[in-house]
Image 1: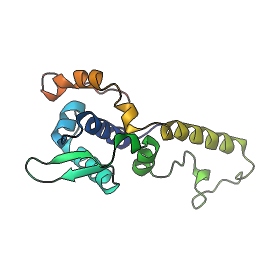
Image 2: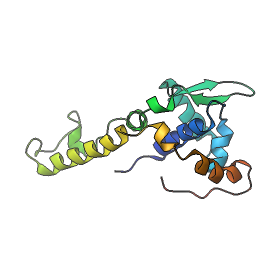
Image 3: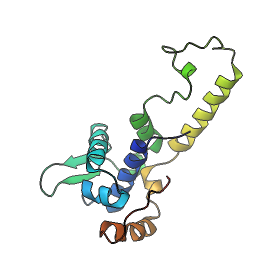
Image 4: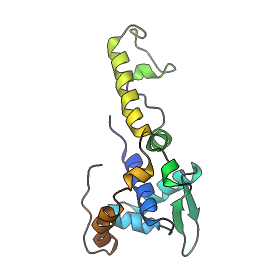
Length: 156
């Protein structure tokens, strides 16, 4: 399974909000830490706000914070919001399926099971879990936030 960069940085934005809670996080903080374009982060924050995962404060001195307790934000739910349907193969979508093997294909069944197992792991994980090593995470991002070091594109 591969998640989009949008999902990865949505999760990173939630993680940073949990680390800074209850303070506001600025979009520019996320941009500095992860080395992304500001419009990309603005779009992510907007989407997470619409989904109720973030509360946003507009204007000078604005930013965002978690919209609910970190323990209540399930990573699998965020992935579903940002990725949409997890149709790994065409036959998972009955409206677009053209495969003549639907219903008898063992490969399709195995891929469905693999997708379900992947999502089950994410459904057992919360934002509180991914921010649980708070001190280590804050120590690692401190130089990035200060602009001392350029971030390396890390794998999720």
